[in-house]
Amino acid sequence: MNNKIFISTYPFGIHDPEPLNLLNATGWEIITNPFKRKLKSTEVAEIAKDVDGIIAGTEDLTPLIQSNQKLKFISRVGIGLDSVPLSLCRERDIKVSYTPDAVTKAVVELTIGLMLSVTRYISNADRELRKGKWSRFTGKRLGESVIGLIGLGRVGLSVLRILSAFAPKKIIINDLVDDKSDEVRNILEKSKIPFAFLNKEQIYTDSDVISIHVPLTKLTKNLISSAELSKFKKDAFLINTARGGIVNEAALYEALKNQRIAGAAIDVFEEEPYKGNLCELENVLLTQHMGSCSYDCRLLMEKGAAEEIIRFFKGVPLLNEVPEQEYLNQN
Image (tube, rainbow, N blue to C red; front, top):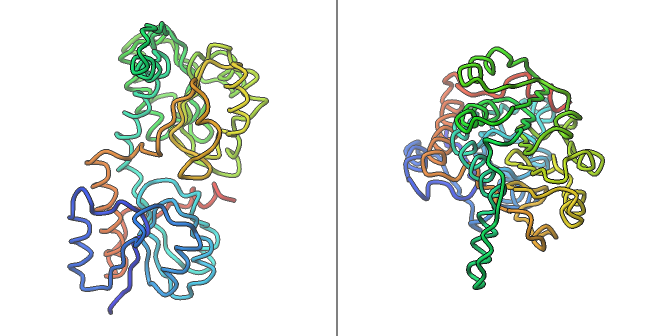
């Protein structure tokens, strides 16, 4: 069968050609992103209107699924599924896979890097020095901070593990899904770091740094908005490397502009590429949804997505089909 596959995400196979080589070796028709940028959902629907499978980034796939009657398989490059309407996929008998383990290490490293940068004003110091100023910003060490983690999945738990090396005053946790108390205890008791599982309101009021590690679902949309930000300490920092839409950007802008919180570091946005008014502010560090952008992580994601779509069309059991819990999370 000469399957037709569209790769919507970009970059793909740029830093290492192995994923593209795997796909080309099948003899199928492989179509890559012609614009070499993030596509609009309407563009995906038009370009992929008659494909059998798609290797997808974070584009909203709803228009494609509604219009393409041939589509059989979606292979997500990454872990987030907010762009994939899973119930609609199930109605249409479209199988979906993702690469849940590939992104963890790179996202964790960026998260820690952003924490250090905002709490020690590293990017601010760089900007000041380039203007001929010598401000010598004074910040707060992570080791002298209470760190709040919302979400304790693959990334959140790994962030906690690395944070333990900084010996924070305390790590406080709110997990929306699972009980991870045993894993947390195994990590932190060795380091004699105090910890507690608390409700979200206590995380907001008690933390010096709050880091978000939950998926975007109906339950987490605008999880952090004006009411929540009003509970933060005035010298608190917010980190979001999870998904755009979890933090309400308009509310965050007002909180930062009025210095109700000390600062924030945001890697993900509701609309990307981001061009919003957070760019006006000096007390927020903005990055370009680059949590997964390390060479090894990109290769693992791209190769994993390519191998999964090949398995599907060759009738081989999938290794990373999206589990039932993810379908429930969207309902």
